[in-house]
Every structure is written in C-alpha cells, then in structure tokens.
Length: 425
Image (cartoon, rainbow, N blue to C red; front, side, top):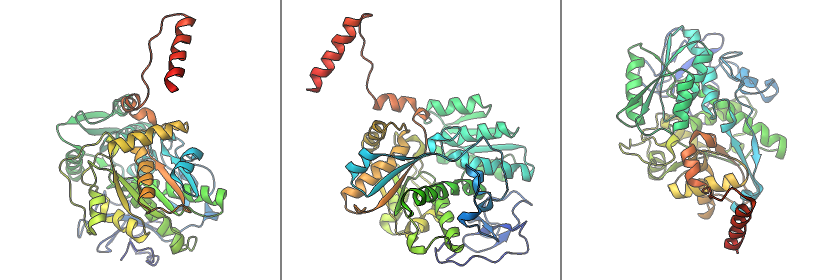
C-alpha cells in the first residue's frame, strides 16, 4: 500500500525533474511534474501525490513560515505573502475543562488572508507560473476563493471563483472581490461548483487550485511540520493526537503525507506519528460515515447543511488519501452538532482566540471524544483551527452577546452595569 506508514521511500523515476515527480496513489504510475497540467492519473484517474528523491530532516529547515520547509517542497521559494509561522496557542482553561495532559490550538486564521489555504496557494500559484498557465480557478465555500484571489493577484494572474449561491459568508466574498477575482455564484452546492471547475480545467480554460491539485497539499504539509516542531520545543515530544476539521479532507491528507515523509527520512518513528482525528458537522459527515462503517470509499452526500460553512461539503475529494491517514495513525472521526460547534466557538473566544465556526469543530470533536473515553486524559493534543473569526462575522455576532442600548450619560451606563451585576447573582 503506497500510503502506508511503513512504505519505503520510492525510487526516483527517469521522468523526475530535479528530484521531484508525481505518482498515482493507486496504480503507481509516475509523471514529470511540470511538463503538462495534470490533476489525476492519466492511466486510472486516481489522485496524485508529489514525490521527492531526497527527504529532509528537521536540521535542514531554516528561516520562518512556509518556505522554512523549502527542502520538503517542490521549489526553493513561491509566490509569497509571508504565510505560515502561525501561533500554537496555550489554552489553559480549555485544557483543564477537557481534561487532557496538554492542549494547544494551532490557529491558521493568523495567515495573511485569514485561513490555512494560504499555505497551499503559495506553492500552487508558483507551480502555475512554472506551467505557464494564464488563469487560476477554484470552487469554494469561501476561504479558498479569498486565498486564490490574493495570491493570484500577487502573482499577476487572472482568477475565477465559483461559489454556491447564498452559502458563503460575506467576509469571504468581500476578500475575493477586493483582490480582483471574477466571482460567479452557482445555483448549487459546493460539490456542484467543483464539478464545473473540474470540467473547465479539463478543457484547458483554467488551472485548478482546489485541493484535488497535489501541489496545493504540499504547502499544507507545513502545518504538521510546525506543530511537531512546536511540541518538540515546548514538551520535548510530538503530540499524541491532532484533531482537525474535515471538509475536502486536504489537511488530513497533507499532514499524513508530512508524517510519512518524516518516517521515511528516519526523523519520526512510526509509533510516534500523531493520531489524525477528523471532525465534521453532523449535517455534512460523509468521512465520519465511512470511518464508522469501515468503508474503503466515501459515499457522496447530495444534501449537506451546517452553519460551519467552510466544511459544508458532501463529497471530500481527498478521501482516498485521508481515510488511510486516519486509519494508519490509529485516529478516528467524529460528527458534532451545530450547537456543539457554537459552544466550542464561544469557549475558544473566552481564551481570547477568535475562530470561525468550522474551526471550532476541532474543539467540539475533542470534547465529545473525551466524553466517550476515546481520548485519554494523559494525551497531548493539538487542535487545528482553520479560519479567523472575521471570516464569518454574522456567525460571530450570532454566537456573541447583543449590544445593550443606554442613554447618553454616565448614569445610564452605571445603571446597565448594575443590572448586569444583579442578573449575574
């Protein structure tokens, strides 16, 4: 199995370019990385992964941000807006309440456009330039569109964004618009948008930068590398478990690939690889269904609904990479309600950290798994939060407290405070 933790480092094929090539995860066919635009295998249409002849060790990394890890990426530098190097926050109140040995939040909302998608775009747009394409495109629940528009603009390229009409938070549409994207609202859900974009890409109309693109996941690998380095610095060990929201399952796939490469490089023992644990909303949980049923494939959910718009996806395209990632690391997947997500969003905010609803799914899922006894009290856990609070200001306002009207005088303010103090008692 090519996606096994115990798989050997592959031998470099003749069609590699400077030690880099693409390889099919199913049939093993290899392809030159930059000769042609390619998203899936020519032979069997399965997903591709980027492979390297030389895998780096921790000692090879230098600098800061995504490109600190250039030795683990296809290029020495990309189209960059200083992405990566996001905080690994301590959350002492949540750590005590959930009852684990250590809990840290890796807040990807602190990237330039406010989500983890920037890590993939700095690599993906660089590859697009290498291929000489003229237009970039994506389907999006919002964060991908914002990142694509920003990095495409930075790279001087046209960007096309397809969004499900009425299903994307206003903050995300505003970003894509301001960065100059050509935005189309499709009368359908995210998966319908992705179907259309894939057809456009297949016709050569645009370069696809959804996570079906294997190069985009290379940038997202760096989340896992930063988490490991952060835990090693603070605890002298790697985390036992990483809990993360799952939409298209790109991050699950990317982190698993980062850890496999570290194992192959001799930097990480198989037994020390963190348990990858995915969390989905109950109204959009095809990955959880597959894990619970022991299925080898994910069943597409045609109807999905959740207030966590960033993970409102019924057909996760990276499931063939992510399912082995969860199973091979001893992880699991869990579904949480929208109410549990909102409660977690409030509790993260009480630690001074603002995240959008989909991000809070990781804490909601960890809490549920602790209640079920699946996560032990001696575990060190990293929870991934994928997007900033202001990505979805309407959801933040709904989860927060309402402003209280008062007269324009000090007495009115004091009266309101006295009433608040009284209600607290």
